[in-house]
Length: 166
Image (tube, rainbow, N blue to C red; front, side, top):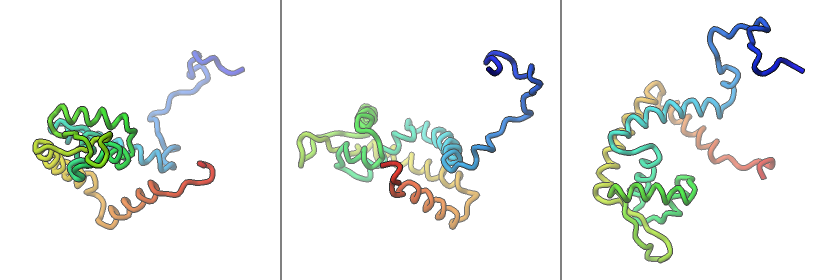
């Protein structure tokens, strides 16, 4: 029936490894991307904190700055977010005085978004910090390696659905 879960492994003569490794997982692209994303997210969190932003709120603010008048549904689609989550993010940015909502002229049921002057200033400063972060994170890559990285990631993101997913 096997060893009881509470029985120590040492009773089987097994000692813990000197160092645990994730080598068996490093063959999976998703796992390697997750590890790289964790490193990026940790650093970008540090870089954005002085601006009062997180990765997600920065992303929302940047898209609003670049697309004045967009609707919340368009923002959700652009960032691949659930629409209710976008409402909470916009509420946060609106409370800070960085984004304003108004009724969309073509559809009075929808909200159009625009960044305030303060929002544009914060976004500009945060972009400079994120640009420096990006340069630092990819400093060991050549321009060609960076191009290939972005191309490969875009191909993974945009790959056609397989029959198994249908």
